[in-house]
Length: 524
Image (cartoon, rainbow, N blue to C red; front, side, top):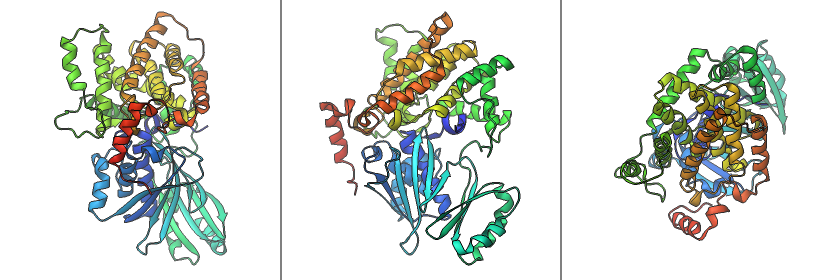
């Protein structure tokens, strides 16, 4: 089991909307490709698997500017990412998108070929965007690799005849080195104590038979330990730990993050506080008079904030403001403004509404609200460890279902509940979202994504209330998470973010999609 990080994989990335898997994940893939290439990229071809999710969504959900921004060297929180296509074109760079049959090992599969000054492919990487901004580079020049941006690595490729000499020069006791061979070539992969041999590596440039040397630096907020020893990995293990150590859920979140990353408790709190600030800023709705409209749905949060004061409606207390908060964040995501994927951009309105808006409505301090975010983040880790945040894999139950699950645990923390109550509320919230399909009309995160954020919010709040009032959802959180993944895999591909089912194929949905497609470039 891979132990995921709260701030690398759950409460983040901090990014330009609208999609964490289809824009932020693509930024990270593009950036890592740029860093592996080692210099400015002038020409690159991004090839999508024709049977995957990218071909139908790459413009509507921002994969075009995501990949381009990363290849230009931008990080996910760079505001210029949303303008990356225009910036690249204006500076004479040639980055284009096409589709063909690849390997269909992941719905978000893309092959990136980077060309050198002689118009030859110098770098080729096979990539997956795995959900929530997470990514994997699984092949480089045909060699199997694993690059996810959380650990520093070096790569040395040479002809087989030069392998012994290269190995001798790399032979430093502390370094962790493995090698793979392919068609007369050997690739050495250094994944530990890279800094101790970096000087030796670049001496190898002059060794006959060395083809190339590349470095993959850490690009995630938290650098991960090479051999982590997590205090726990699942909800059941965490519950036992809390009883044994008498720890609250937010304290366990910090201890977990420290046990897998190169971070102190102070580092973790600092990142959490920064995440809170960015989330808070994203709750201010975009101004429809000055903000460009990238989709088909007008921005309504500001108007609704005024209407709520004068229109007769069902009184729902703190949820009124929280609902408007969720809508505002999602509108910012759709406007390609900066939001926090929590755990995804398509569900980015849930946690700010459930934790920040409700927490402030309860009169809680910033520190108390941050503890709620940490509680939510820990539950998100269990989902990342055992399942997925990718709608392409498990539909919207993996996005808004996960966000609702996390939010329920965070609300229980705000209410002063126990770890066990947090996990029960999270389990109930997930149970209520099982089977939720992903059918973004026109390939955009507008309809039904915005209203599903609101449903996830209210589900979380009511699940938390029911549990603290005494209701027992019976099925443990761990089993509810496992069920979400299983149900997701049982859903047809048409209901998993491919725009081939659900609301996407209604008469109105098709009409909207047709109008949007008319203004989009034709993919080769």
